[in-house]
Image 1 (cartoon, rainbow, N blue to C red):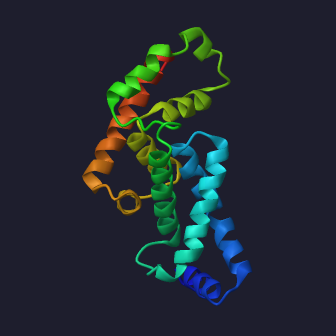
Image 2: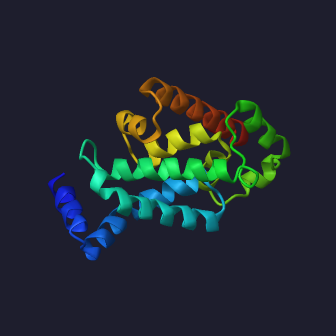
Image 3: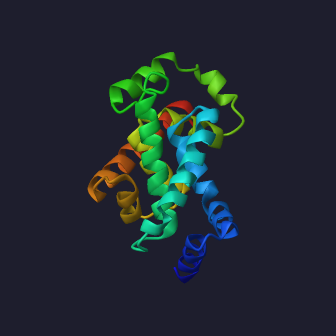
Length: 184
């Protein structure tokens, strides 16, 4: 935390190199978060850039009540959600199980699934098809290794909801794995 405080102080004093360090330290998590919510690569880059502009403009408001990475992830999450709402005709939010099931009506046949390079690639493709709330929670918890409390701060969802969505996302993925890989 002290290192984050020094970094923020330097940024507030106008040290551009310190801001570049902040970007470098958090770029992976921002890109990962944005990419999980927004699938268009050009939009991912634009939204990630917008996130860091917001971080720079609002760094003086950071109160050190959480890790700076949690605060930045919260900005990435809300910026991505706002982008999706703004361009909902381009990127439809899939918030219901019915929408999720609809995706699978046009699903590849089992033979082509087995031809995929490996299970990891398959799992990532299935995560991309999850409803956005499930995908977000799963990504934050398992891939970014945030705690329930941190995910609550990032998304604004109560901890119980986070746990529920995480449970449901795992269940859906498990069912897909079991149905497509008989040896599991």
